Amino acid sequence: MMVPPTKAAAAAAAAAATAATAATKIKTLNVAPGKIGLTLKVNLAGATVTSIESSSGCNGKIDVGDVIVAIDGRKLQKVEDCHYNANKARQFTIVLKKKEAVAATTCNEYSLLPLKSQVPPHVIEETLSIFRKKYAKEIAKLKIGAKPNVEINHIFNETQEVTKESKRYQLAVDRRTTLYKSDLVSKHLIPIITKYCQDHYDGTFEIHKTLLLMSDAFCPEQKEHTDGIDNANDFIVALFTLQDNTYFRIRDRLNRELKELVMPQNTLLFFHSLKLHAGGRNPTNEINFRLHFRIGRKHDRTKSISMAEQIRFPETCCYGCGRTYTIYSSRKNHEYTCSLNKEGDAHRAAENDQVRELRAGRKRVRLEAQEMKAT
Figure (cartoon, rainbow, N blue to C red):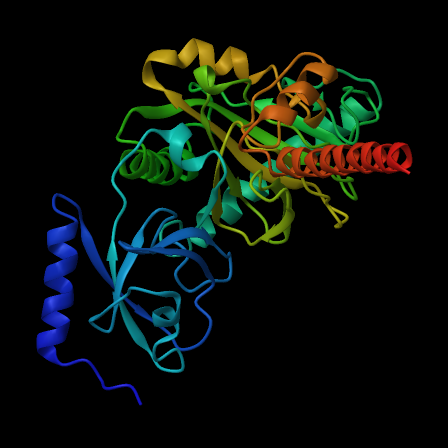
């Protein structure tokens, strides 16, 4: 039978956490009973958050990399401690991660940030109404081969080629346009995104480019790709949903799982430019609108914008570390030796087994030959 922690024990656990994490921020979080929706890696420091499910009650309150050091004042030291009083409301003591370079912390992760309390629904509906009236007509012109009044372009869909049959479109949003100066973008989204960058990337990033993405009715899902080329020109992508049931696919390079996210209206999705992803299908009979922000380093505005146009597809992208190659054979050779590629480890292990079997077979042949000579 577990004994409830005393106030002294709680104080001791908090003091230990504080001493072990000097110059860091500590946060307490009340968690509802049941499943917490977090993937944790337990070590001597506590339980490090490695991923957060979109349905988790902790989503938006903690981030990947934060460390849970105590539950109800009880110091967390092993996996079993995570289940302590799981059927009751609990209080987590969390050490917030230090600000780090973006490439080291987000290349294999993504973050969903619901904005229900930060962006008023009527602001989104007003903007969406304008989009439907203005851009639906322009897309209709593009379909019949007429020149639209704005620079709407086809983007690739199921294949790498950009064709006129594609049901995906984009519009670059200039800083001088009415859309960029609207309440939704200038008064709400830009401050939220800027604050997120300051909190997570040490304030070295800013919005470099804004796009309005559109998927026509019953548009199929997009081909997987990365928006960046390599770590020298990496950046962060923020996708804002204007409608419910916005589908998006994203792949985790660590386990190669392809996840389909179904995001509600008024949600921000942050992910790294080197992360494999794809626009999801649009199962509705109306155009789906979303805003796409590219957030790069302040001193690399021109580079991050120009390099972002040179996307990469899985055929030239290592699933392990994200490094890209211009030809398929080079990527295969790299994946074989890449220490971050689990499949490469499996190939090497399988080959080692084959080598051992071959050597054992040769040894048996030699022994049999020696026995025959002896007889």
